[in-house]
Length: 430
Image (tube, rainbow, N blue to C red; front, side, top):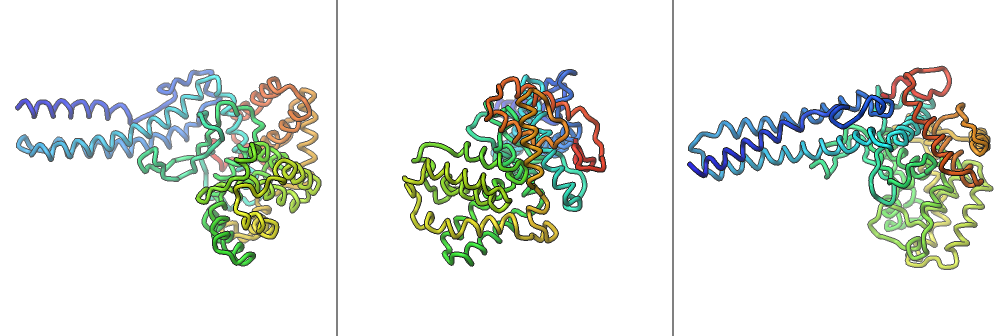
């Protein structure tokens, strides 16, 4: 009897713990009335609660099975059922914890900066919706940004199964921003948005297969083809970031990749990230193809001056030797060849960027340098305009404050669908 009482007490504790993790709302994460303009949308809360309710239903099923065990059930059977309940509670705890961590930051001093990045991400999706409105079927919950430790931004794509959540799929895209990168002029943020666009457009596998096939046709070396196949996601995001933000994105990515030569000239055989030395030449090739030859030439010269004399370093010589022939092929395949899931259009067709866009960005950078906020351009262009203004000597703290205030204010605007390229399309959930 004493053993059964011990187990009953454990079961009672489990049931009490399980009841705390089935719902989340603005009040529970500490969002105050003044924080509401920066908060996740009601649709994001509904998606989170739908996921939590499904997990909670699994918890309750396991608790019900546990309660149906009779008083004479073997102790081993009781312990097994308890373990199954605890597994489901662990799943609930992890999912609840992720949503709480992300949502509660909208009640902090970082809330305006996070809302500003949300507006930039929406702007990137706007571009695709305007250029190819039939590709996204129905509403999509926009990506949400959150702050976390780590050297670089990162993303968790929509629907991806997360180990952190014990195999639960992610209900909407999450983009991690390191604490020191909250100012909205980081080209790497556009790179992370591009990962989500690639997944939502359904060209993840199609892109990889095309890259491997093109590499084999160009160089007939299966080892090199497999390497570029592993790199395909990061190369795609790099090239798409340039289409979203122009040449400034290439320079921003190069700045992010600039480290001492032992790191830049290293090769990790199983890494999904291209070795940094070759990665910047991919960026330069994309600039060349887009018609920005001067930027392409300058970027290549800067990179060569930093690392060319020490190359190939720790990179296999055959990988460096093949790059001059292969890089133009890979850029052409990813950005300029039609894809079935893009309705036989190329990436440059659904994310167009031209010289007129670059002139607008440069004009906006001059306005920012004079302390004036250009409000007549997509938020994604302000990332590049701000980086140019920063390079010209504009004081960063005041410009960051101005940018964040403006971009965060876009979250308070109603959803509308104007005739021109929309700032907030009706088909993209708030």
